[in-house]
Length: 269
Image (cartoon, rainbow, N blue to C red; front, side, top):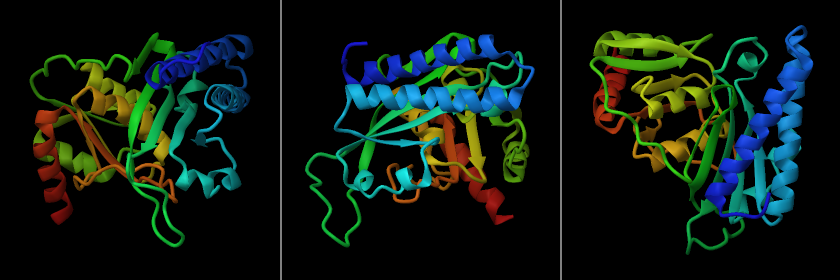
């Protein structure tokens, strides 16, 4: 791969990692899903880290598969550019034969121009997601900021993507309040991609996520004109000292006011 602009690089890295994961599935099979999942996490992480080290040597990386010490490296918080990656989003689904709702996430966060370098004892300046890609290898799809998707027209009714294994109770109450159907989907990347492809109209989650779970799909969603925020409507912030980002709302833009109001009503009950 030659060095390309950040949008194309995110797209190509996510797609390449996805191809490697498909090959790994073919090679190892599903007889030992635990071993397959571990191998998938490791191989995809190593490929992305090596590629970014070679192609963007001056940038920092925040990866789900990094050690705690690597995640806590203070240089990440003062860096101009940080890649936020999830080498295998939906590890559970990756190890299940026939499941296609798993993904590879590659996103780039950049400090806003003019913010300067943070002084000692002061918070690091804010930045923003500037490029990203979500590869859905088993579906043969890669969505990226290189060519943001255009969500198809919304159908009648409302469909909200939720976790297959742990749908939040408040989302079930929200669905009843706004008259929505809940659609279980595996990885966070697959859920947000489903909003952008028209399979669902929104994704609502609360109960525990990290920056790498949403950075890449949120970058693509924002580039596509979708709404993305915390469930209280506040901005999603990345490259924070603590990468915990426990809740999220991604939806078609016209539905965001209804969903945010519904979430407030549910929390008042």
